[in-house]
Length: 191
Image 1: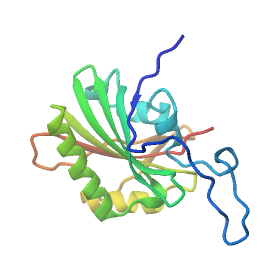
Image 2 (image 1 turned 60 degrees about the vertical axis):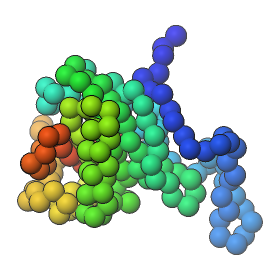
Image 3 (image 1 turned 120 degrees about the vertical axis):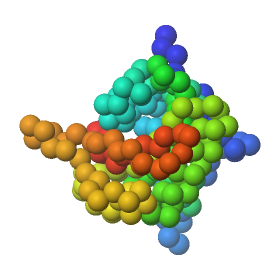
């Protein structure tokens, strides 16, 4: 028996969810019939997605990353998660991670996420904070990369291409703060 990596925290008093209507037709889809959110692997899987683990572990500070607590922080009108907060444990201490869907990110929103991540890091005595934008498909995430670049004043937020394989890059935000802030745009999770 494998024990999940995470403890899930939700603000909802009930687990009953209604299927959303499609326009005015009266038709509706159940959860299993609707397209998934880019954050589904973050919020409903037992571990941190492999793409995120790979990019974070390129920096030794995030070695041995496991998730302890995950909290959805923003939902769309259909109840799908647009952003979430994760308290992670590494070999070097705790880390505060905010992950956001690439379709719902802007420079201002990412700066708000950074502020939230740093605040939570301070609250839980974490040694670092991370902002991740999860791409929902393989269209390159140009909008998300531009938003990250504008928010953190980075000239070229990209993914490296090595031997025809995209490798996501972890960047340090470079803010003068007691808690170091990192960011990355993650390639789509293959399902």
